[in-house]
Length: 164
Image (cartoon, rainbow, N blue to C red; front, top):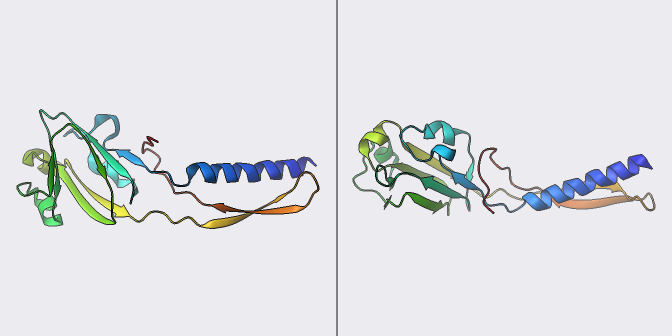
C-alpha cells in the first residue's frame, strides 16, 4: 500500500512540475546585477545561456556613460564598427524580444567599450518542442495501473531570471 501511495505521489509531482514549467518565457538580464557595463564580462555571462524564440533580453546601463547598438553583421560586430547600426538604444533600460531564429549582434555604442569586450552575439534557437511522455502509476483506490501523458517543459538556464 505504501509503495502504491509513493508511486502515485511521484506521478502527481511529475505532472505538476511539467505543467508549471511548460510555456515559460525566459527573461535574460544581461550581466545579472552588474548590467551592461565595461566591467562586466558579458562574454562569460552569455556563454552558458540558451536564448530561444519568445525570450526577452534586458539591458541595464548608465545612459550617461553607455549605450547599446544592434549591429547588422558579424563583420561590424568583430571590428566594432558601430557607425551604421540596425538600432541604437540610449534609455538605460531596454527590453529586446527575441522574435526569430538566428544570430543577433549587440555591442556598446562606445567604440572603445566595444573593443574592450562590451559586445555580445545572441544565437536564438527555436522554441523547445513539447514532447509527450507516458507516466505510469498505480491507482491508490483499486490498485489498477493508470497511464498519463505529460508534456516536457523547456529547459531553463540556471541563472536567467523569470519575470512572469
